[in-house]
Length: 119
Length: 378
Image 1 (cartoon, rainbow over the protein chains, first blue to last red):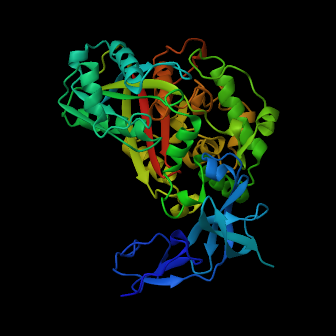
Image 2: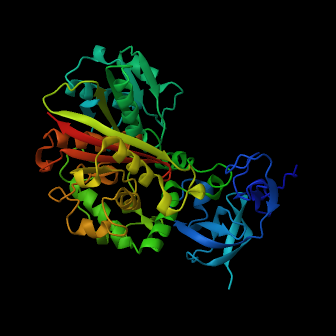
Image 3: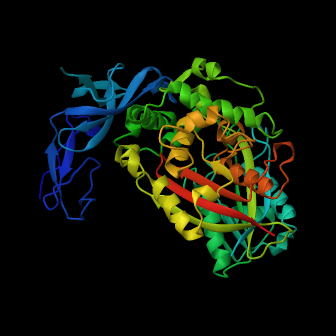
């Protein structure tokens, strides 16, 4: 039984994923089982923060006063080196295919993962 | 066998002072009258949802309000695919002999019943509460992500996407019920305010008030029958983070199964009604369904292929992009227009031949899909 690791969704500077011991599949949305094969208790692991940009969308029209203070902000999907995809923020000029690494930034009263380009 | 025997549609835009139930009732009354039925002959009700007036039992709330006591009733929630999903269920219900006449109804005062911010925020909740919504995305951002990837993989440009907005607007100009009646150009779309890049304001459907309804029956009630030939669904994910590769999305699965269920091919189709919440949605779905080659849909728009006089008339009422989008009713307008075209009642929008139609709905972020073939029979 692996311990629960805290991540950015709980205010900690970390990206945590689950790794299935049975089928080897990495999953990002946490559950008590592997969604690919159903095996119980996938191991919790901290991700390196390294990945590749899969998609981007620069938000220019936000829907709440808290998020409006941040426009424009870039929502990105990143394929991590650990093999799962995640949504995060990133530099406004990120392009698909860019190699990126994560840091953490405040956003609307929370901490969110924020990706910048690495060379 | 099942037949769409009646359709009803309000204008979309502002219906100041109308509740969701008011708009549902108005559309329902039109559909029942169109089917040549009495209210008391409706024995099944399927309804969608209202973000303005949520209720855990909307179908019975509506039935009581409308004044009927059906033997079968409940709500259905599949986002933008709800209208076609209800139609598919109604088709199976009447085929199975559970009921004779199902009223399918959707309506919402989404524009005047709440602020635009409230609508945008309510809809963003289709995202994952912990891993997505906390990042401040909006529905346009979810589709903006998909658009960026699709454009990257298939060489589609923002100007290409703009063509779909221009086409839908040109169609809306000929429909008095449409929300927008000002012509737009590709340059107008390109110059419109950025919302969630690459999507700009005119790439996005509006928020509207409106209602739509159909009656699905075991037998045709008019001289021209509109028969449900076959339909299928596919659900590959809910959240865009968990979406499969672009080549494995649900539209391709749904259409393959709908073709098998109906025995029809894309080459049989004479009229298309395809979900168009954003320009990218329409571009992708047309290509996923096989109504255009990969990356070629915009060129087909430019050549007039999807126009009223083209080889494959598409959303001749103006679609979500320009007729309007009131939630569940939004994409139901596509089916109402298809029915009018198939029964030669589309007036100055009438196409030459709408004998076989393909409809496709999408809910979530290309999460849930329903494909349906309709055929005109006499």
